[in-house]
Image (cartoon, rainbow, N blue to C red):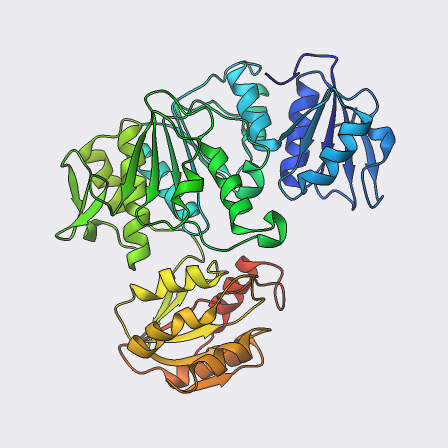
Length: 455
C-alpha cells in the first residue's frame, strides 16, 4: 500500500509529461507535493506544488518529511534511493506507473476501479502488441484504456476520470518500459507479456542480467489465474521467469503456445485466424499478432471480434508504415527500429527486394553484422545516414552497392535511384535518432516529406 492519504507529503522527481501528471494526481488526492527537475518543466504544474528547479541533483530540503517519492521513468533510481535512505528513510519509493496502479487498486479515484489488465513489455514490438491488443478488445465491444509507456500516462487518465473529463474503461492494456518496471511493485494482471529481450538501455541497467531483472518485475502480483506470455527460445527465459511460480507460461511459436500453423494464427485451444487478416508485413508482426491475439482472448475477446480487430488494424506510425508507392517502388518508414534486433526483425520477413536506409546513434551491445545474411539474401542496395552511416556502408559494400548520404533528402534521392520497379525502400535505421533528429518520429516525418517530394 502506498501512503496516499490526504495530508501526506510526496516528492516527485522529474517533471516531464508523466512526472507532471503524477504531481497533479497527488495534488488531487490531497497530498502536499514537492517537485524537482534539473530543467524547466514543459508541462503545467499544480499551483500548490513547491517546485525546486535547476539544481544538478535533488536538494536535501526536498526530502524533508517526505512519505512518498515518485520517480519519473527517465530518472535512474539508484541516486535517489541513496539520498532517500539518508534523508527520508521512512519514505516509500515508487514510479509514475506504479503510483497510478496503486491509486486504482486502493480505490482512491471516484469512478475508477480495478478492471481486467494486461501488461506488456519487451525490447521491440511492445507498442504494436499493446495497440493491437487494444484494437482487438475494442472490436469485442469493450472500452479498454490503452497507454502507459505508449500514449497517455495512466496517472493522467485517472486524473481525467477524477475531474469528470473521461470515464474509466472496462479493461487496462499497458505498455511498460524497463525504466517504468524498475519501480514496479506488482498488479493483479490477467496476462503479462515479454515480447522479446535483446540488448538495449545497457547504460542504465548495467548488463543484460540487470535489464532482464527489470523486465521480469512485470509478473509481480500476477492474478492467480493469469498467464505469462514469452517468446519461445528467448535466451534470457530463466531470469525472466525466475519469480513466476504456479502460473501458466505460454511460449509464442513454441509447443503448446500460440503459433503460426498453415498460414493461420492459432491458440492452444485450437481457435485460429488467417494471418492475412492482419495487413502489417513481416514475420515480426506475425509474432506481435500472436501475442495480441492470446492476450485479447485471455481478457475475454471472442473469435469473431478478434477477426474484426485484426482486419481493421492499420498499425502504428513509424513502424514499417507504408508511406507511398511511387514508380513501382514501395517506401516504408520503420524509424522506430532503433536497434539492430529491430532491424533484423523488420527485414528478415520482408518479401520484396529492398534498398535499406540505415544509420543513427549506435546502441551499446549492438552488432550490425547480424544483418549481413539478410542483406546478402534480399537487399538491392544500402544507403548509410548519420553517425553510424559509414558502419553500414562498410558492412554492405562487398555484398551490394552501398553509398553514404549527407542528409535525409540525399538518402531518399540515392535510394530512389538504386531501387528497381517491384522493390521497396525501407528506412530502418538500427540506431537512435539523436545524431540528426529530435526523436525517431521526427526522423520518420523527415523521410515521409522527402518521399512525398519525389517527382
